[in-house]
Amino acid sequence: DPTVFLWEPAAESGGGKYYTYPMKATGGSGSYVWSCEESEVISIDSGGVVTARMKGSSSVRATDVANSLHYGTAAVHVVPPQKIEFLRSKVEALIGTSILIPIKIMAHIGDKRSLYAVMDCRMTNLKIKSSKVAIFNVSMATNIDLSELPWGSCGALLATASTVGNTKVTVVLENALTNRLDASVTIAAYPELRVVDPTDIAVVALGSSKTFIFEGGPAPWVLDPIHFYENLEPKEKQLNILRIEPNSGLGGQHLFRVVCLKLGDAELVVTIGNGPSPTNQFPANETVSTHISCATPHSMKLRPRISTTLECPLIHMSNRNVECCTYGDGKTILASVCILIMLSFYLFEVSMLAIHVRNIICFIQFPILSGHELEVEITVFDEIGRTFHLCNGNGNQAILPIYLFLTHLKCVTMVTMHSLQSLQPIKLGP
Image (cartoon, rainbow, N blue to C red):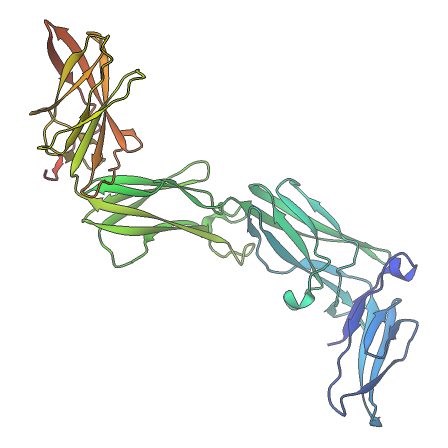
């Protein structure tokens, strides 16, 4: 292929830099004398480095120093541009990282029927425009090594992602001998993919479910969103202890409902990204992992939710896997409230912890007015002390509302639970 330089009128008039290119020769003794025909168009030094000076064409000769009759020639052209385009590249970037967008400029030589790629355009005065300037910081990558770019590239844009969104970037090339040339590409910036819930490990009972929430990662590709995907699966594919159901999320969140089918632990890996498309042939994808443990409930802690600055000393009942707490400051008349809870746990498919009244297992003392509502926090643990996920509470705690009526120093309780669905409970054992 011929060596094609981009003609720079500014350099020719003394207002810019000339393009250079090192020619290479092989064969003979390995030492050469370099020369050119049209010294006004190009110049060449003793090392074979060609400098493009003005529009035109010339030939370059490399002569073997050991034999002047042994030589090779090459054609060199300095021509104005005829076409500019972006080559295929990555168009999605994680915030804080950069992508290179290769540029190809082509020109006519000879009969003007064929287009040839120019060697270098890194010093060309390209105007860069963005439809949303805050999304990316875009500039010409003037220091990039051309060998790092795809074949046919003469330079590249360096785009650094600043904030979430997408923008249309346009480069404009204006030359004295050609019309206005331009090319556009859409690029997108996305936040880091992270686990929102659970923050550590989700402990879930058999037959129950946990909604896993993730946030960030690539958004659906703005020019072709149909190839967007959200996948959550166990790292060990052969593990059959779970059923995973994708849920719709809003605001960049990705939701999956995971149901425990068998006892065991699993690492879950979520992958968010876009599939290839004509406008995004090298799509980005992000992965992050979290953990779930399908376990059997083993113990429980009860704590009343009341406004007090008093500390709550725990009273561990040695004969039962339940902890209770007592409030008292020596100045307030305390009422004893009997909390009646059966020792077996029932968990519905919707992960609602159902607590049934059956046997007295502990007492909690606290200051309360008759007729007021008391909320008791319920925390359930597995055999090694990990906290179960309870979807009817805040985080890993469920709230049991109890309405209290004091009569003649006797405590009467009425326990109410709001049913979510009329489903048959699954008994999990003690």
